[in-house]
Amino acid sequence: MSEHDHPHDDGGHHDLPTAARVRRLEERLIAAGLTSDQEIDAYLATLYASASPVNGARMAARAWTDPAYRELLLSDGNAAAAESGFGQLSYQLRVVENTRVAHNVIVCTLCSCYPVSLLGPSPGWYKSFAYRSRTVREPRSVLAEFGVTLPADTRISVWDSTSEARYMVLPVRPAGTEGMSAADLAGLVTLNGLIGTALV
Amino acid sequence: MSYAPGDRVRARAGDPAHHTRVPRYVRGHAGEVVALLGNWALPDASVVGVSQPETCYAVRFAAADLFGSGDHTVTVDLWESYLERA
Image 1 (cartoon, each protein chain N blue to C red):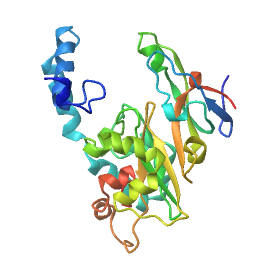
Image 2: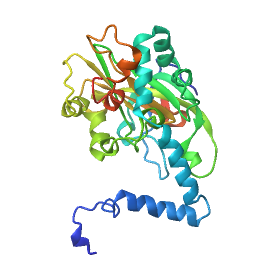
Image 3: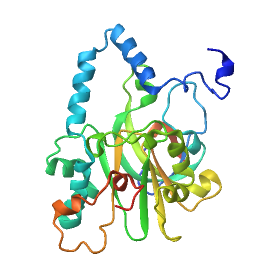
Image 4: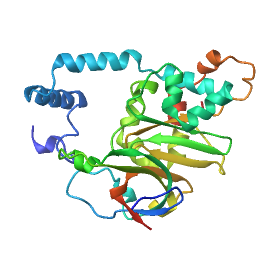
């Protein structure tokens, strides 16, 4: 493969498919005796058997219908997750609340951190260079591309997940849902809503 | 040195030769501590096998300060070693 095949290559590895890069890393770790295929498979099976945006949606819907739970969710996300039966999280969960005048959106500019056990596997766009670099700089434009057009006076807060904390957005409860059960409300909440790239 | 919510802090401006978790776009910029998150191992030390727990803070920056435009804020989690009083 000559250099001329990849005139825009900026570092020598971006043109390799991600899966191949991951596999090479796995092989190095296995060769070094640090892990095994069996261990990796078992970890992924455990993680993805229970990790789903349904979990985060249930927490959001419960917060809409139970004021005490909402307080707990916003002050101690880990306690709220345990209260909802999701056990002890391996990270510190911080939940940020949208209102009619304030909108939150989550990003990880360093990699693609987010609360996987409550949101499920992260979408491809969440890991993209475009989302990660543009969201901190021009969130209003990025949100508009997701179909979220906010009033000009809505305050936008971007949260860059650079530490051991993981962020989740509590969306605004949609109008016209009075009387709906928490279970039915949970069905309205999307993964994008919990990241902040959708209103709900 | 430790900080409290409301304190003005500045992210270290330097570009270290080692792994760090200070995003380039906040380096040298001042923001406000909005929360103390926890006492966690400093990644810059962990990467060379040293456990150096210290306080990590959520620090809020004005986009206009970071980028010269924008009316939003960006909140970044930064370990104590990454900060100095502004």
